[in-house]
Image: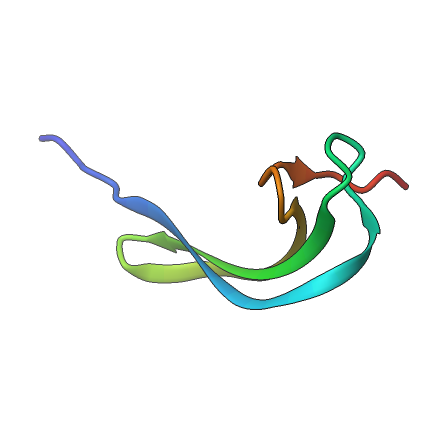
Length: 67
C-alpha cells in the first residue's frame, strides 16, 4: 500500500509600498511587499502567515533586513 501526501504552499501578494532607503547594490528604490502564505496538507490549510519582504524596484533583488 502506498500513501501519497500532497503538501502545497500558496503565496499571494497583498500590498506593495515604497520603503525608505536605497538598494545597496544598484541604488534603486526599495519596495516593501506584503505576502500571505498558506501551507496546505491534503487540501486542508495548516498554517497562515503574512510576511513583509523587501525588493529593489530597479534590479529586482530580494533585500534582507539585519537586526
